[in-house]
Image 1: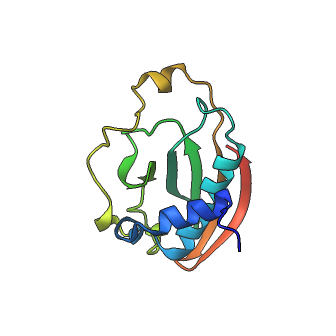
Image 2: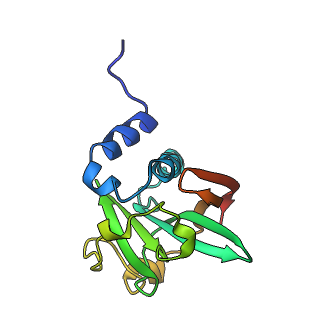
Length: 154
């Protein structure tokens, strides 16, 4: 058996080791987040354009609840409700207080203070980077059921 691991296996192993922080994220959502991170790592060949910030936000349209995950080069303090840091990645949460959360995020386990080691909307990278985020949008049925409805540029 080979000791060589694929990038996707490395992401899964690295992120799963930090159980205290990942307990803030339901297993179903965590699995989808790993897919986004793995995709981002596989397509980010330019280190300058590579991002270690991921945004998760909740929204509604009529009676339907949505969750959108995206890559980002900076987070926006205006919308930041909390975050977790897993290894060198920041997972920022916008509007997890929403009724749409449905137990996907345990907001009591999120860091509330703005992180100092990741750029925000006022940093140089936010002002000087032209970047199209990539992400995935889901219909939220329950904390155990997310239906992917879109994947691509946002």
